[in-house]
Length: 490
Image (cartoon, rainbow, N blue to C red):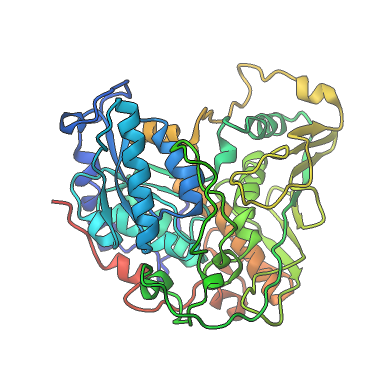
């Protein structure tokens, strides 16, 4: 862990001791045998199966996180679901119960507990770990609250909305020794082995001395003014807003209330349009953290800068002048790192990461695949390419750099829960890839070159930029409130 000076959201010694003590309760106190097949779904299965609570039951949960956990039913079981929309909550409960009933060959559904408030779920002593699949503005508070409750954590990217949140999250997770994974699926070989392969080739000098990395990301469409609407009876909208300012409800601020069902099979998922909150800065910073969290992570992996950040960064972007949706449009960002590499991000580049060295280049992308059905179309069909095809055929020798290999992202997290060893992405790595995106967003907002100290995590001689490292939190929500509480699990 990088040594940091004390800031508002750096843990004090007293906080660190409290978090560490909290980490000895709950999941860590459970027996941790090696992962082994178990077909038992009854009450006697608790010692064999990791008990998971799913927090957030919307698009990303249905298309990625719940399926990713459900398929490992021999190692783990979703025993509780939580959502602020009671309709989504009921559908998630039904889906999970029917899935396990089918696997057990029974018509009787397995019982899954449901919660409308995450705080009640975290009090449940029968839950070992949580999967967090909520809007971005809720990630940091939920991670901290779960860690302090002694739960292990899987969270969708980005890690946090602000630099201050990210630092607090990383500190709490490390202090509590929580098993952690973030939704940076490009680090796992299924379904994209090309990212690890490409980073290994770069780290082992197959393109010569690295000097430039180019990241291509999509953009979001601008919106229009939206009328105020009555809050649906099934949605706890005030809590949905969380630590963000109060704002009038309109469906395009939150998520669609009506979905198009893809199929009747419990194996399949609902195909829905991307929710409006992804395009509003109160709840998401836009594609710079949306897709950016994925590609910055790969860039850092290949650059060997996973535990640091740039020294300089500058950017420009177009922001909507009216309408509900206000995240950035077209943009250009340049950042310089201490190792001499320049990282450039631009929406005109092919969606992916291009490493350029003294002896050639290498490009990696998803190759036309999308993480969810409603993700933006990618701009290339090439999963991996190089200036010379021989680069891609090069074998990595036994004495060369071999990066962490994760065959399956959710399974990697489950193995980490059992072994208590770090998984594919550590909290600090997740914070550093997310913080690089946040630095890009601040540079786009200010439109000028900024100097950054990656150790102190502060801008040099720039109070205006430093003010953007955090943002006000509406009580009783936010990380400040979460850090003051330790949820007891029994």
